[in-house]
Length: 127
Image 1 (tube, rainbow, N blue to C red):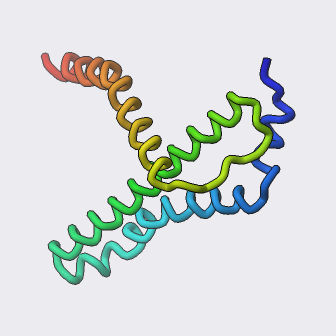
Image 2 (image 1 turned 90 degrees about the horizontal axis):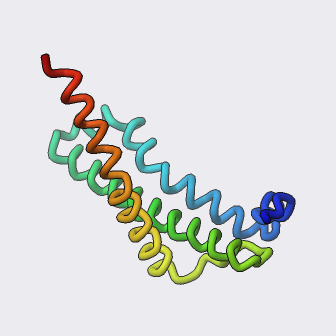
């Protein structure tokens, strides 16, 4: 049985780690926001520079989101073992690897739904 009181208290057991998690979420979304804000400025330097900056921002954002996914898995692992504290931010390589595995599994498991949706759109668009 899930103890919802402890589950809601968990993020507030360590304010430093909660702040680090908040900063990780902010920094993961920051490249996309900056690209949208400075799109006209970057485009004024030319299309090649726009593509280079966009790829760089995209890779930084993907890396940070994979670390965030790995940390989410670490939180779930701590909760499954009934630990009552936030896990530490250590071994970013393992956080990235866990996040990468999570993304790959998510893509593999979502393929049937995506294929069914694509098939239904194709069938509905053809006479």
